[in-house]
Image 1 (cartoon, rainbow, N blue to C red):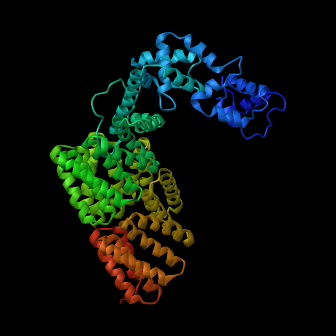
Image 2 (cartoon, one colour):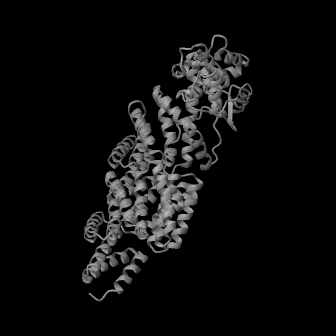
Image 3 (spheres, one colour):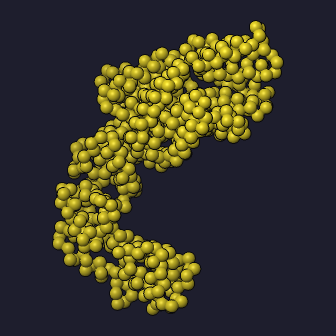
Length: 617
């Protein structure tokens, strides 16, 4: 059995002889780790040092750092690690030897029976029996039920042995393994995606686990994440273009929900370049869509727009209508974030037409959800509610839980602005349950952010702080800059209400910096109002007035009437605070008119109450 690191160091020092290795030698832990904490390897390393006075631990570590020479380096003239491994290997029958050798080919850290079946070209049940037998021979470790890995030194040895196999045999085994990972990952992604995406190319070449639903699919993707990434790296490095593209596509969904987005950006940029030079048009367009989505989420709207425009061009040239609808929906998201709401409605309406014409119900639900968001932003809450309710029906009818959670979250915003806080809370809670049940961290953070707004409105500032802080933590962990800015802006508003204007201005200024850096003018205009309120709370009324006027101009330019009304309220409060009730009342009346037109009940009541307290202008 392997030793604990501290025990391995103790054995190394004891076996090397008294006072041979100082306890504070910086290479002790490294040599123990390079020996894999294996007692035999540690004794051999100690023997080398004991019989070679000129050697020190630094020199030995240098010899052992080369993975392919590590096993042969551990020989003291009488005993050698390779010889011990040879005895174990030659005691196996041919079937076990073939599989064990091929374990030296795996690019990732571990495997299960399905991956072993692909390597060995056998069925999963046979592979499971072979793996268990290898465990019995101490050539493999079953560190969790059904999960196996090689000791580092044994892995190096297996790599050396398999190098003696004919190259076509090695290539064929690795091809089957990469194909298995890519096919299963793409199949799993279809079960968890909110937006339609291409499935795997062609039939499965080997058996795969039963992915009975979104929960099982996400669990498989998370379990195999390291193996999938290692497989993609191997395929990309060795010019296996088809595998590299398929594995990038298979990783796209889990990277979107779990992050980090820096890794997603790197992977999809590489995939788009590979597809452009070596792949078919469909693969190039799909890679561009994935790249565009991540560019949007990492704050590069111009890059996102460019990638999506190129994808749209390919889909139209090849007559791929479902692909065209997907690209149009993503273009709509980019235009909405940039403040081009009319342009967003145009492309989303076109996406909706295409999806309905082709019977693409999942795509229809996605386009309807995005259309609902834009209609809400343009001051059409009734139209937004209709689109979102229809999207919700479609998602429930097709059992698409991710889409259901997205539609519920947006519907919660409509209910909130209509003044139905209890219904908004209920809708957000249901959405949050789905997000957590399906393991969608990005969606969970988004819903938590919206729930924070409701809690703030109901006066539960502690509860609002709690959910917004959790959302901020998730966004930062996955690298979602826009989400981070949203959570910061809302947290800043809560901090202002709890009497901490310094913290509020800090959080809101950081949010504004992200919005400006990413070109998100819609949210910049919205957050400016809250920043102005925080500045006013510090006592700097003249600066706050300037910020409110800046926000008013932006919100009018972007046709955002609800935020325009908030700007008007802020300007009114300045006039009231500086003994100018006439101007204050005039701006409040303008805000009241907007709120009434939009049907925003809580805001209407608040402004009416404020006006009733004023002397007639």
